[in-house]
Length: 413
Image (cartoon, rainbow, N blue to C red; front, top):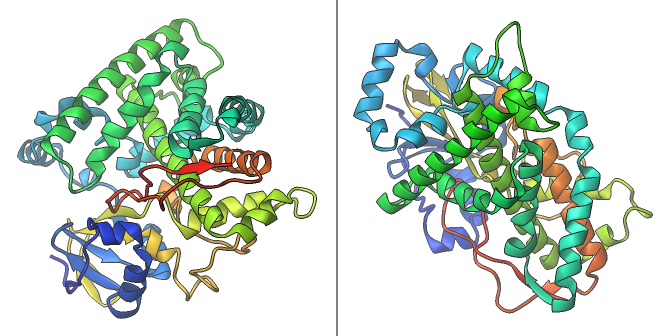
């Protein structure tokens, strides 16, 4: 077991949800490495430590690739994977949760289908969607930015990318929310039941769609993944289904949360919003750098965990094989040793080497799409709604440590 000392850390409290950054500052300064019994992991707070661990081959997202199949089977029975068969089959073993040659093979196959050109070609479609939704909302004079704009956009784009039937796309957002709820330690038995049902339904529809595309390919991501070949190997049916789920869950949650957190930051810093409204004439690249600052300043993904693959010493702490390590991205992104004026929001910040999409072999595959969606969404909102302001009380954040997410964001103009 880790030799890290415990620290005062209550990540599921309302006070922490409202503003975790003073807590992070205290932890970075006084207990940069500590053990949380509640989370069952050793947590790291400083940027350099976290980046080093992300690139360290002695840690991984799973231990399965260094175990015998019999041991894996015993541990899955012990952990009661059979209670949630669909969730275990498609969520616990997706691309994000694999390592080694298996991870590399699947990542190459998915990358061959999700090309930079495919993402770039979506710019016009994203802009048209945002314009269309805003046109409907403008006469109302107010909206819940999350429910009315930030949530529908990535769902529509993922459905377009996958080749998902339009009449069924309303299912995607509820499925995603129910599945990712289990990422948080404070989930309930009811949450587990909902996640299992959502995974089962999603997998069935994805499997049917993949089967149709195998015989009738189209210009969509599922067809591309069905056709992708790497040295004679293809994605299995389970790998394709699990990857599509991951693209929805990870990409959708990151985009929604980053857009909401980012717009709130801009409303709290009107001088920064004014800089963006002046773009592109005054500062052509400012929207691009603004997206990076939004991702840094209030990261949509705050915690990323890994497992220790072999006994090791790091940052004065002894870690044992099988220990869980928690990497606090949100804390690292405010590290004053790396970022000048780390607690200030500056849309022109450069350089900006934040860790919100990770780094190394598990760098987020959907990062280019998320960046493009956030840039177009916030740029368009600021340009078309010059009098945008908060509508009512200060918005509240959901409790949780993995995702940093607002409950709602009511605005008016």
